[in-house]
Image (cartoon, rainbow, N blue to C red; front, side):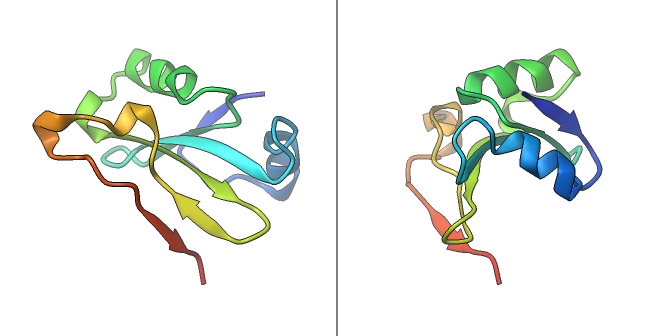
Length: 95
């Protein structure tokens, strides 16, 4: 199930989103419009949804949330844009 919205996901929605991988939710976010597409099998699926809704490619970042470790990563193939100097794998922990 893929959900796309600009408001926080409810606990019920998070339970639906984690059906794909159980402890990991893939996300693609338009950082300018603050829209999140989540729950896809492949990041390009969420990317396509956001592009269809008018997002700009360089505003889109793919990643995910590890529900066990509370880490958020953003190292998806949709982020590989040498023209934007995006080449490093990054992670950070939510507190």
